[in-house]
Image (cartoon, rainbow, N blue to C red; front, side, top):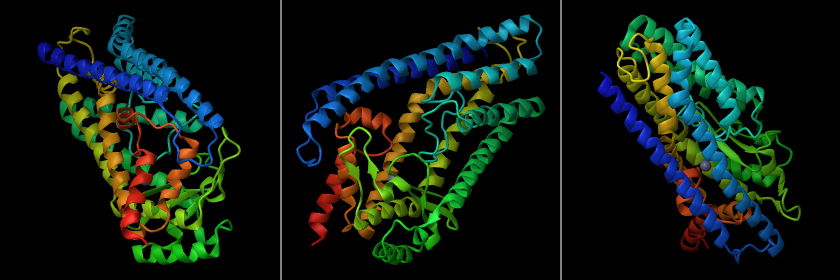
Length: 424
Ligand SMILES: [Zn+2]
C-alpha cells in the first residue's frame, strides 16, 4: 500500500507544479503582450490618454497578479502537503481525538480559504457553474463566508460519517451527497434570481417598441414574458446571464446597469448604453444558453470531476496505513481529509483549464444561437462598447487559461462577418 500511496502522491504533486508553471508562463506572456499592445484604431470614443491609462493599469495588474497568485497557491500547497500532516501528527501526540482533529482541520481550512484564496478554494476543485454569482470583491462578507463553509462542510461531513459506517464503500454516499449539494445550490440560486427579477414588461426603463419586439422573439423561442427580467442592485456591471435546471424552472436576467447604461469609472466620458436592437441580441445569446442546457451540463461536468476525485480519495487515502508522513494507526478519515486537500490543490489548474474550455465552448454556442435566430440585430454593438471599457486585448494563451468568454474583439468580428453575408 505504501508504494501505491506514494505514487498517487507523486503524480498529482507533479501535475500541480506543472500546472502552476504553465499558468505563470501564461501570466508572463500576458504581461509582454500588454506591454507591446497598441491602441485599436476602430474605437472612436477612446482618447489616446484614456487608452494609455488603461494600458498602464492593466500592466500593473498583470505583474502583481503573478506574485499574488504564486503566493496564494504556494502557501496553500505548502500547508496542504506538509502543514496538514504536521498538524495531524502534532495533535495526535497531544492525545486529541480524531473527530476533534478533523473538525480543527476543517476550521483551519476555512480560515485559510477566507484569507488567501479568492481565486480558488481548498475544498471545491470544481465549483458548480453558477455564472458570476460568486466572484466576491470583498472577501469577508457573510455570503462568501457561508459559501466557503458550505464548500468544506458539504464534502467533509458526509466523508466523515460515510467512512465511519461503510469504510471504503462509503464513496457511494459521498458521491451522492456531491450531487445533492450541487442540486441544492442551483435550486436556491435559481429560486432567488426568479424572486428578485423584475419582469421586463413591467420595467419602466425599457421602451414599448423593445418590449413588443422581444415579446415576439421570446414567443417564437417558447419563452414566457416573466422568464426574462431586470435585476437591481447587483453591482456586477453591465451584464446578463441565464440559469436553468428544467424547462419550467429557468430565468434570464439583465442587470440594471446594462439596461440603464453604465458609466466607465476609469473614463467618465464614456457610457456603455445599448440600443433596443443590441439589447435584444444580448438576450438572444442568453436564450441560446438555456436552449443548449448549458447550466445543467456544466453542473454535470463539475459533479463528475468532483465524484472522480472523491472516489480516488476513498480508494487511495482511505486504504489501510502505509503513508510516509503518517503512522499506520492514523485515522483514515484524517488521511482522506489530507488526500482530498492534496488533490484539490494539485488538480486545480488542470480542472480549471478543462472547465474554462467547456464554458468558452458554451459561449461560442450561445453566440451561434444568437446569429441563427436574431443575427441581424446589432449583437456586435455590445462587444464594441465593452472594448471601450477594456481596450487592451489578452494574450490568446492567457485568455484560454483564464477567461470564461471568448475575446470580445473576436466575437464582434464574428458577428460582423456573419451580418455582411446574411443581412441587408
Ligand atoms: Zn453567455
